[in-house]
Amino acid sequence: MCSSITLKGTISPANTRISPSGLIGFSNKYFLSCKEKGYSEKIALEALASSPTNSDNEYLKALTTQKDSISDDLLDCFFESKKIENLKFWLELVKTKKVSNDYYFSVPNNRLIYSNELLPNIQNTLIECIC
Image (cartoon, rainbow, N blue to C red; front, side, top):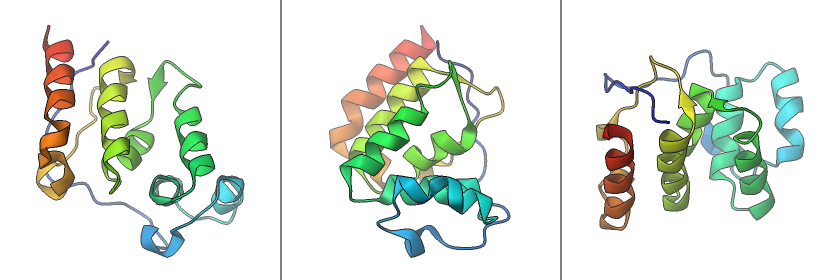
């Protein structure tokens, strides 16, 4: 179900009021209140992806099951995470979900993607998406 994905320049969060690092340990119960207070949804998602708690990670993954398609911000939070398991999950999402035609990501900005541990996942995703 891979959609076409375009590699372009760098991704820069727009209209952010706080940095994701300022929300480490962010809890899913604050996700909606964060949005209500005017914080960028992208920043809230990034904070959940960086959270060390299993409940926050499970909540974030549960957001991906609500539709056949997936938002760019939700994809980005997994891709930009510093956790290798989130990057593996991102590869699965790209492979299995409907992704917008104009979705792009910047590989040079993500050093984790060069990990040997991810190579089989990247190969599998490329094979599934190209064939």
